[in-house]
Image 1: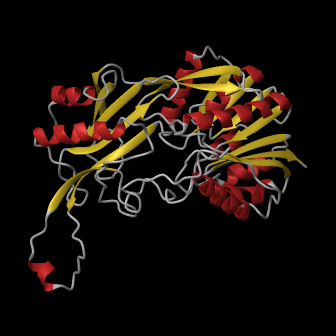
Image 2 (image 1 turned 30 degrees about the vertical axis):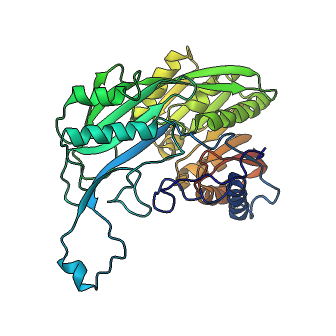
Image 3 (image 1 turned 180 degrees about the vertical axis):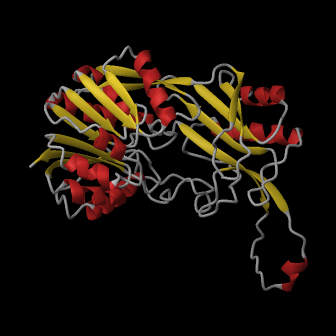
Length: 411
C-alpha cells in the first residue's frame, strides 16, 4: 500500500507555512502516527486495531484552497527587540500571497511551492502576484484593515476537471486584466469577484459577481461496491461557499463504505443528522424509502435541495434546524430506521446526543472529523449502544487531522 509513499516530500515553506505540519515524515509514518493517536483517544471504547484508508496519492489531493493577501512587516533575520540598532532601523514591509504562517493570523507565506492543490496553483499565484504589482493594488493589512486584495479561493472538480477562481476584495479593480491573468494559467476557469469589508479574516463574501463563465462548478462522487465496480454516481453543484469534503478521491471511498453498510442494514428511513448538503442522503437515496436531512446552515440546505433535483432524487426531505431542536420537536421514529451522524468539529450538542442515545433506533453510523469530540459523544451513546466497528479515512495527508467512522448497534 505504501510502496511509493515511503520517501519524504519536500517543500521550501515547511516549518513556516501553516498548510502542512507532518510533511517532514514519510506518508507511511504520518498515517501510523495518526492511527496511534486515534487508538489512544478511543481506547476506553475500542481496543481492536483501527484500519485506516489512505489517500492513494498524497500530492495534489485538495479540491479547494483559500489563500490570503497580506501586507506585513518584513521579517528580519536575527531580529532582537533589545538591540538598539533594530529600534532605529525603519520597518520594511512586504506583500505576500499564500497560506498563513504557522500560528499567525496576520502574516502569510509568499507561496512559491505547494503539494496540496494541483500543479497549476503556483503558476496561478505567480500570475496574480504580477497582475497585482502591475495594477499597483495594495494587499490587505490585517492589523490596520486597509488594502484592496484580501483572499484568493480556487476550487476544482477532481472528477470533472471544472475550475472556479474567486478574488475577494474591498474595492473595485481592473476586472479585464484580472481575467487575463487567470486565463494565462487556467484558460477554461470560471472567474468571480467577491466583496468582503468585514473585520474577520475569513473568505466570507458580502456579495458575489461573475466575471466570466458560471457561478458554480460540478463535481461527481463515484460510489463503488467491494469489487470496485461503480454502483451509483452523484453529481454536486458547488458554488464558492458550498461545503464539500476537501479530498474528493478519498471521500468517495468513505461514502462508498457507508453506502455498503446502509445497503446491508436495509433501513426504510434514514435520519441524516448534521447532514450538510445531504451527501450521505443522496449517496444512499436508492437504498431507502425516505431520508430526512437535518442541517442548521441554510445555504447548505439550499445546496442539498438543488442537488437532489439535479440527481432526480425525490425521497430526501430537508429540514433547516439545529439537530437538538429537531429531535425535541419531531421525535425520531425507531421502526425500520437508521441514524447517520456527521457533526462539525465541536461534536454533538448534549441534548442531541442524549436524544439519539435514547431513540431506540437499532443502528447508528457516526462519522467524525474530530476524535476528541467523538470520544465525548461516545460516552453518552455507549450507555445504550455497543460499538461494532471503527475505521478511519485519511482525508488530510501532511496534517494531524483524520476522519473516523464508527458503527453502533442498540444493546
